[in-house]
Image (cartoon, rainbow over all chains, first blue to last red; front, top):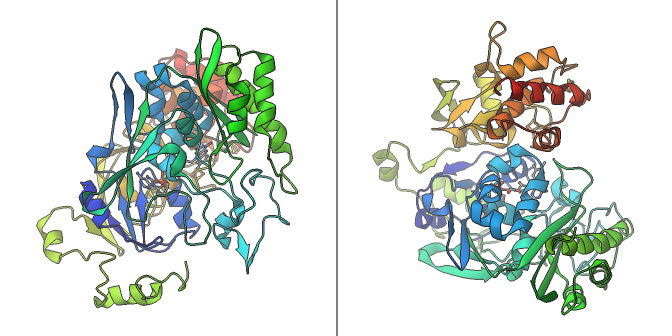
Length: 326
Length: 204
Ligand SMILES: Cc1cc2nc3c(=O)[nH]c(=O)nc-3n(C[C@@H](O)[C@@H](O)[C@H](O)COP(=O)(O)OP(=O)(O)OC[C@H]3O[C@@H](n4cnc5c(N)ncnc54)[C@H](O)[C@@H]3O)c2cc1C
Ligand code: FES
Ligand code: FES
C-alpha cells in the first residue's frame, strides 16, 4: 500500500472540495471493507483518502408514508435490521443476510456496497478494469468462470459485485449524489451502474468528486424478493442473483421488474422475464416461464455457461418467494 | 494508473511532483491552508507521514504514531504488542483478525487505525484472563473448540459479538452468524457447541 493523506471532513461541502476531479488521485473511504484491500493490492494508489466517517448528514434511515430514505453511511446490518425496510423491502434484507459475514455487514455501508469495485481477478491482479494485456482482453481465452454472460460484447467482461444494486433497481429506488459547490443530482438506480469503455472509467456514473449521499426507495406495495445462488454463504459473492418486484393484486401480476446480479458488468434488467410474467398468476409454471425468458440473449464465455441455468432457477425462485409461494 | 491519465495537460507524475513543491495550481486538489490545520485540534487533513493518534483499547488510551495507511490490525500487533488478533488473509476473508469496535465485530485488517480513533476497541486481550475466563472462552476450552488455535482469538471475538446481538441463537442462526470466520483445522462442530453453551450461560 502506498502512503496517502487522510482527510476527515465533517461536511459534504468540505468532502467534495477535498476530492480530485480525476479518478485515482483521491478515493472516498466509507467502511473500508473493499477500499482498504484495494489499497493494499494497489489497484488504486490515491494521494489522498477522504473518510466520510464524520459526516453526520450521511447517516441514518428515515421512513415516511411514501418512501424510505437511507443515508449512504448506513451500515448493511443497520439496513437489514430497520423496521420499515423489513416491512416493505424483504429483497434488501435477504441481500444483506446472504453476505453472511457479521464483520462485513456491521462495517460495510450501503454507499460502499453500490460503489464497490468488481471482483474480476484480472482487475484485482493489476490488469485494469478491462482486464487487458496490450490491446486484448484476457477474459475470453482466460479463466472466465465468474465473468459476464450478458452485456459482455463490449470491452468490459467483469460482473457488477453489488448485492443491493439489483434489488434497488427492481424497487425503483433513486440514488442521490452530491458534487462540489453544493451541486446535487438524483440518478435512478437503473442508470447508476454502467459498463466502462475505457480503463480510466469506473462502473458507475459517479464523477470522481461526487459522493453518494442517500438512497430513496418508494413504498409502492410491491411484492419483492432476492434469490441468490452461492458457492457458500459467507465470505464470498454470489454466482448469480435475481431480484424481483411486482404488484400482485387480485391474483394477477403487473408492474414487473426482474433484475439480475453477477451476470453482467452492471445489474441486468431482464425485460423479457418481466414481460413473460406480466398479467400472469404466479405459480410454478409462470415463474419457470419467466426464468426461461430471463436467459434470452445470454452469451456465455468459455467457462461460465453454468450461469445460464442458475439464472433460470434464481428468477423462478425469486418470483415464487416474492409472491409468498416458496 | 499511468502517466496516460492526463489531467489538464499535466501528467499524473508531474502533477504529484508539482504538488510536492507547491507549484501546480490546477485546482484539482485544493491545498489546505496551514492556518486551518493549526486552528483545529484534529486537523481535517493529516499524513501521509506518521501522525499521532490515540486509540482506546480495552479501556485504556494508547498513544502511538502511525501513517494513515496502517491498518488497525498492524497497529495492534506491530505497535502495541497486542498479538491476539491474527493476520491470516489480510483482506477481509477469514476473520482471524476480528476485534470489536464500539461493540461491533470488525475485521481489523480492513480498517485503518486512524479510522478507529475515538472509538472503543476491544481485543481478545480485553476479555477474560486464564483464571477468569468469559463464558465464551470457558466454553471453547470445555468443547475443545480449537486445534492449532490460530483462528481461535478471532472466533472468540466473533462469538462474543454474535451473542451480544443474538443472545439466544439456534444452531442454524449461529452457523449463519459466524459465517465470517474460517477455521482451517475444521473445528466448527466444537465451536458451535461452545457458542450455544455460552449463550445458555449468559452469553459474552
Ligand atoms: C469477503 C467479502 C465478501 C463480500 N461479499 C459481498 C457480497 O456478497 N455482496 C456484496 O454486495 N458485497 C460483498 N462484499 C463487499 C463489501 O465490501 C460491500 O458489501 C460493502 O458494503 C462495502 O462498503 P464499505 O463501506 O466498506 O465500502 P468501502 O470499502 O469504504 O468503499 C468501497 C468503494 O466505494 C466507494 N464509496 C464508498 N462509499 C461511497 C459514497 N458514499 N460515495 C461515493 N463512493 C463511495 C469507495 O471509494 C470505494 O471505491 C464482500 C466483501 C468481502 C471482503
Ligand atoms: S486477516 Fe482479517 S479477515 Fe483475514
Ligand atoms: S483451530 Fe486451526 S485454524 Fe482453527
